[in-house]
Each structure stands twice: as structure tokens, then as C-alpha cells.
Image (tube, rainbow, N blue to C red; front, side):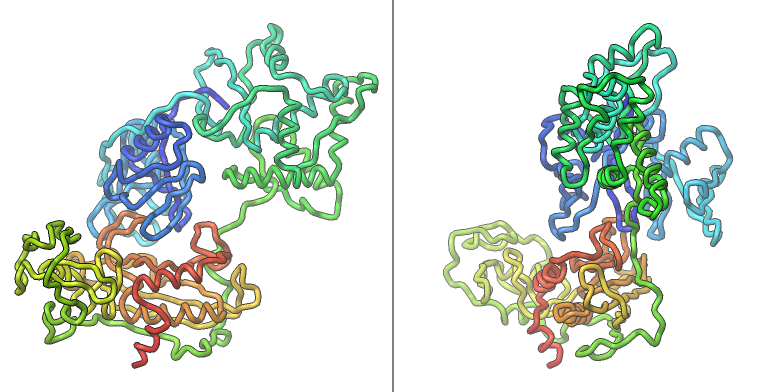
Length: 622
């Protein structure tokens, strides 16, 4: 840990594995909630940005939760140099196909701003993984592969919140030369730090004559500040969480080592000294070597595994160490010793690589692709369905309503006026009297007939009605999904968690086009990003049931809609419509993959909310 100043940027992980920054206002709001109560559990993001009204941020699990869909995404608290773009309130953005502006990822924006301040005429982003060139003279972005050009812009926003204190080394900046360090803070109690400190305790015990007693922290600090060596900053420990989210404790290194042993008894060995208390003192080098010798191959591997789990969970970069489980005892021993020494020096190390994102299955030949038993055809197209002809809104609603001659003394939840008084709706007047009141036949909720007609006219006008209070559906609900194609077939591979089943692969393909009268902006073009989209179901009885209901949802135009993407912020684009799909084939790093024991039940519940149940398949046949 180092004492430093930094700007805090809160970021969320999208389905493409990219960390996207929240706005400065949202980051300020999150920091304010943390300062107000260190034990705060969640943050309502809509209080800072009304566009984020459905979202909650859980500070304990560090995840963003969308209340209306149940989508969960990881979040993180990142630190950047105060002299960089977020510390100056500078935002770099590119123009998307709809004409709106999308901010670059934070690291990309910082790179662009640095080149801009150096007055470079252009900058090539290949070095940070993007095939774009930024031309400052024309304020344009050029794709090196397609030569497509987009406009970019630089604008000023709020400065991200500034914090001062102990920060993780990888996100800190060195103090000015000659400036003495502040007194070290008490050690962190996170599993990674306890593991590192316990390793130091073993080495320190050997250096003190192999007595097995760890050197107290205060004595180590006094030795570090002795005149012969000059003042030295405390050794930074990797993997530390932000200071406001970590608990601290005081005590000897021996206590820390015992805490590691208790916390990770299943995977981490107790680190004992090389000699007993009755053994004669030895030279420092020999004692240290003897202590390390007690970490035999089994202990080294168990220590490496335990440390790797902690580091992978905290996102620490991996160090590629090959043949960790090889037949030779040399490579595992060297790998373990390397990890111990790097950890003791405060350097992050991970001896196993974290799992990779696996979006697609292995290649499948055409001969291996089979039709799904019990499901007709392998492709379904959809076109725009028009509203039922010859039926006025009043005629449609009469099928679902019962007249109420004596309205109860309560509010109409649409216009918020008393049911005993005329409707408070102020829009175009339907051809019904404003004082008529009706009761929905299934759920029994009561409204002004005037209000229900106005609500129907503002919807899809497909002959169906949904109760605004309990969401009960009357008739057959349809959506506004643009025209497209849905393919489905079997592939000879198994999903994680379903080893005994083949896989149903669904391929959605929707081209860009022009919005119709049922869409948010009629006559305006819309984009269709990420198509074709591949989704996966296990070829089980329940998986086939879900597929059949998804086919009904597709025919009713309920799978997709046109709106604003919650991932990119782009408007007038094709988005998912509240029916979750699994788009990861061999992993579940983003929450959109397998294994997920509850997914099939959850998606059946989501389909039921849209009015699609097993009875719907029979209705479609009729």
C-alpha cells in the first residue's frame, strides 16, 4: 500500500468483457453513500441519474442489479492519476450510427487525452488493443481495417471524486523524491494479505534463529527506520481492497498467520518454522533456507492453489508458470518458491490462469447439425403483424370488462382521480363518457373506462390488454419486434452442468431498418448490433419446452424491441425484451452462460409474465 491521491472511477462490466465507466455524477453519488455510512449495503443509482432508475449497486458483493429484469453485472472501484482525463473532467466520445455520442472506455480516453495534451497530430490505438487511429486535426476516428471514419469530440464534465490515502500499488503513483512516507497503516485482513504476511512470518522466524517466533510488527518498523539503512516506506502488499472497504487489525505476524490457517484450512497448510525452540541459533542464510525447506512439494502446491484462488477472485494479473503439476519435482518447487518470494516482496502473483470467456462451441460441420425431435422445422421468420381490423378500442375492451354502476370510493390508478368522479385524463378524448367505470373480469381491478381506452391507444393496439396494477394479460399480447429470422437446431456438444445432453443452438438475425408506427421514433432508422446472436439451451425435456415457448414469443414479436441499449447507451437500436437468453456456451463469466441450475425455471417465469405458457403452444396450433 502506498499513500497517494487519485480520482475514483466506478465502472461496470458489459457482456463483451469491457469495463464501462459510470458518469462523474454517479461516481460522486456512490462515494457519498460510502462516506455517509461505511456499512452501507446498496446504492440507488437513479438518485444520481434518472436513466439508471432500475439499477441498484450492492457494495458488499460489488455487483450492479437491475430490478426489472434481474440482470446482475460486476462493478469495480478504479483509481486513476489526478492529472489524467478523469481528474480534469475531460470526456472523449465517438459518434454512433444513430447520431448520439458514446464515451470511450476510461483507459482509451486517458490515452487519447495524453496524446492530445502532447499536441500529437494523431495517435494509433493499436498498442492498447484497438485497430483505430485518432486524427486530432479532423477530430475523427479511422478504422484501420475498414477505413471507416467516425466523428469524435472532447467535452468537459464534472471531475471524478478525489481521494487521498492508501491505495493498491497497481493503482497508485510514487510520491515526490525526498518526501518521507507517512507512518504505515495497520495491516489488512483480507485473505491475500494474511497469506503474504504469514509467509513473511516464516522467513522472519528463520532470520531470528529458527525459534519459530514471528518478529512483531513494531520491531520490524523500528529496524526499517534505523539510521544505518535510512527511512524506508513499508513494503506494499498486493490485492488490498480500497481503504474504506477493508477492516484493519493490529497484532503480531504470528496472529496473522494463524488467521490464514483458520480461514483457509481446507487449502492452505500451516506454515511452521524449521527448527524447534530448543534448537541452537543458526546463521541467517541457513536458517532462512531451512525454513523454506519445510515447505515441501505438497505444501507448495496447496499454497499456490490457495493464493491463486484469492488472486483470481480479486482480478490480479496472472504470471504464466508452466508444468505446475508436472512429473518433475523441480518445476513445481520453483513455481512455489517464486510465488512465495514475489508475495513476500509485495508483488502480485498467480500461478494458475483465470478461466477464459467461451462464447461459442467448437466448430460443427453441417452433417453434425440435426433437427430437434418434437419441434417442427429449423427456421422461423417473422414480419410485422397489424392490429386487428374492424375493431375499435371500445369493442376490444368490452370483452374484458364488466360495468360498475356504483364505483367504490377509491382512486383510479391510471389518472389518480377518484372513481366516483370523471376521469382525469387530459389527452385526446376517446368516444366514451369520462365517468364510466369498468372492472377487469379476471383480476377484479377497477378503472375509468376512459383511462383504459387511452392506455390501449398508447400501446401496441393488438387486441390485448394488460392490467396496469397486477400485469394480468387479457387476450394475446404481442410486441414490436422488427422483422427477422430465428434458426434452431441440435449440435453434438454439451453445456457445462448438462454433461448428458446435447445442445440446442438458437441463432437470431435481425437486420437494421426503419421504425414503423408502433416503434418509439416512426420513420427513423434503427441499428441492429451484434447479430447474428447465438444462444444455447440444453437438449433436455425442460430445454425443449423452453424452446417451444420461445418460438411462440418470437411469433408474437416479444423477444426483441427497439429502444436504448443499457450496455452502450445507444438509442434507436434492437435490444433484448426482458426474456433472458444464455449467450455464453462454455463459461459463465458474465452471468449469461452455464452452469446455471435455475436458468430454465427463471426463463419459464419470464415467459409467463409475457403471457406465454404451455397453453400458448396449443393456441398457436389452433
